[in-house]
Structures are given as C-alpha cells and as structure tokens.
Length: 489
Image (cartoon, rainbow, N blue to C red; front, side):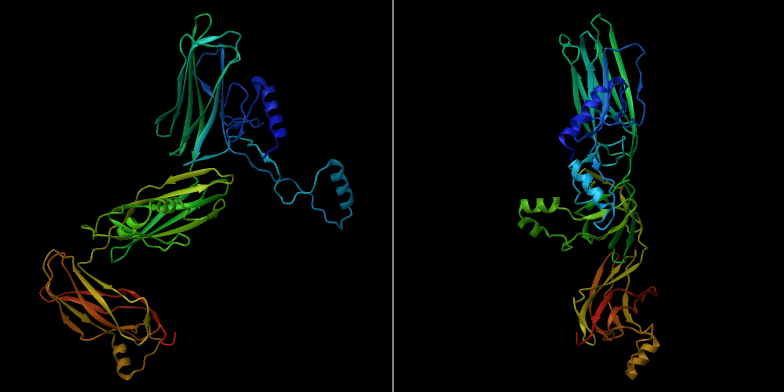
C-alpha cells in the first residue's frame, strides 16, 4: 500500500486544484479523484466523459463532485540491470547508499499506483461512487433535497440514494453532504448516473440542477455452451470461457444451476471432489455447517490471463424420462464467480442453457449394471433394458448378429487384433430370444452374459430388436463402451 506521506501529498494536491482540477471521476464541477478503496485521493487523469446538466448556465450556490471509487494497481518500478561485475556497479551502489534507498527484493514496488483513468467496469462487479454536495457560496441554503439514480442499458432506473433535509434546516457555507453509493451491475452496455438536487437560496429563489454521468459496463467473459444428448437421455454440457477483460482474473467458482427435482449432476471440474451428488439420506445426515462450508468453498482455482480460454464439463442425468424428447429442454444456467488482482469480486450468470431435441428412437436399448472391472476371457453378467417408445404395442424378439469374419475367427480360434470389425465383446447364449409384448412406454429387462475376447476399450454391438407383427427391425451398435483389462493385470 502507499505510504501515509504519499497519500497525504495526493490529497493536498487535490484540494489545491480548485474548480479546475480533474481526476478519474465520472465528471464533476469540482476536483475529482480516484482512490484507494473507500478513501478518495487525488489523481491527474482526465474524466472519461463530460457531465451534462439540465440546469441553466446561471451560478449555483452548490457544487457537486462525483468520483468513482476503485482499487489501486501494483507498481512495477523501472530497474536498471546491474551486476556486481559491471563497471557501473560501484557508482550505482554509492548513489543508492547516499539516497538511503535499497535494492528491491522483487520487481514489485512497495507502493501502489492510483488509477490514472476511469478504468473499466465489468458485468457482475459492484460500481461504487463517492458523491459530495458542497455549499461553495457565502450564504446558507435551505429545503435541500438530493436524489441519485442509475439508469441501465435497458432503461431500468435504480434509486441509489435519496435524502431531504428539514425545510427549517440550513445548509451553511463550506458545509458538505458526502455519501458513497454502490450498485451491483447485472447488465452490460451504457449506464447513466443521474444526480438531482433541489434547494432554496437565501433570497427565496428556488434552484434545481440535474447532472448525468455516463459509463459503459463490459462483459468480462465470452461464454458459449454446447449440449450433447446421449441415447440414454443423459446430457453432456460443455462450456467454453474466454477472459475478455483487460486484466487477469482468478475464477474460483463455476457452478451449473439446475433443477434438483429433475436432474442429477456430475461436475467434472471440481478439484478433489468425489463427483457425485449426495443422496437425500446423506443430505439429512450431513450437518448444516458442513453443507454450508461445502456450498461456499471455492470449487475452482483457475488463473486466467486476458484472452485465456478454458473448458468446463458437466453431465446431467434425468431422474425421470422426458415425456417429449423431441422438444428443446431448458436444463439450467452457468454461474461464475471470480476475483481480480487486488481482491475485487464479481459474479455473473449465463442465459438459460437449452438441450437440443433428441433424435427419436422407437425402441430404446440400454446395457445396465456393468462391473467396475472386466477381465479378458472372463464372462460377466449385465442387464439389457428395452423400452417401447412407439404409439402401439410391439412383440419384440432380441437377436445377436455377428459379422461373418468374426464367426469364422471364433470357429478356428484365430482372433486377429487387426480386424476393425471384429467384435471385442460377445453375447453368450441363444442368438434369438422372444421377449414379452410391450405396450407404449413399457419397459422390460432381461439378463445377458457377455464374454470379452479383446483387451482395451471395447463396445457392445450387433444387437437387433425385431417386431414380429410389424416386421420392423431396430439395430443397435456401440451401445456401451467397456474397458477390458488383461488377465495378468
């Protein structure tokens, strides 16, 4: 932080600048300054825009100062590289010893720099402004009232401050009314701070003025989401983030807000998380304090420089099947929270994320209850679930079909790994099985025994469901991927 003497020198310079002083204010009729948080101090930068006023050009008894409160920045001193073997080393060391200065331990100075301009304000941050109404005349005024509003890009008005003095109370010369207003900005685009004052002069003349201060709110992140719907109605949500701010940001939370009654969420971005949602029983047993700590704990620690990009991944599983898979579904939105260089915080939410329609399959087939560990040439059991999505009753039969060369390989026991179409997991038992008839929306489950014959990631394929009445054939390939381990692993 800046030393006390440096701060006082800045403040004295601001007081001495008079009505002609300029600073990092939104625009003011008196000296405007930028400050260390909550402490206005002077700066020498021009304001980003000139305030407009609806009052007449005649003199007013009151003057208005409007300044943005923002944090300072780190100062990087200009260091002269000089080693002990250099000819100039002795002169540089002697000069530093005479001035009492010492070589810094790092490239960062022990001082902080006051903002030299209005700077940038981003969506999700808090806009803070210091407003001072000052009686600069030689006579008191009365019936003073003041109102501060903020008009957003969508023409919404927010009242940040409103005050009215008692009509009998006098606002004497050299008296000031100072206030700090804050507003969490939730819209990007042009915003206007509107300051209005009414008062009564000592001679009974009613005066009024209104001033406007314009600034632009920018978006700190460019965000794009992609939703991929799987055959089992699960959804993969990929979110791409890019830091579009002019400075680095520390992203510490990226939560996907969703309907807990409709979906289960798996977050692949948390560090050290077990990546599963707690059950209702676990939730009930867990203490309120630990749940609160878990909810407020940072889920990420991602440092993003300007223009850096990151990808986030979430998996949503419906708790109940959707009645209409052909329609778009609103599944939630992404909420971000970040910190800036000196601890300033910001948060924002994306728009509603929509899942595209799922290509409709009249008959759905799923493989369930796959073991966690599968070893080559060791059979294992799974459940095969078949769902009727048609509008009529079907009489299904399950068929296991294999490519001709795979059947030949099995007969001669010559399994060649180079065959791209060779099945890596076989279904044991009968090749044709009659299933019970299924009404619309009805589900049946049958056990299957699978035999893995190749190591690595293998898929279960070559299954067909045939409706004997309608003579409709439904083919299923790459139903599920299974990691097959070697026998000696």
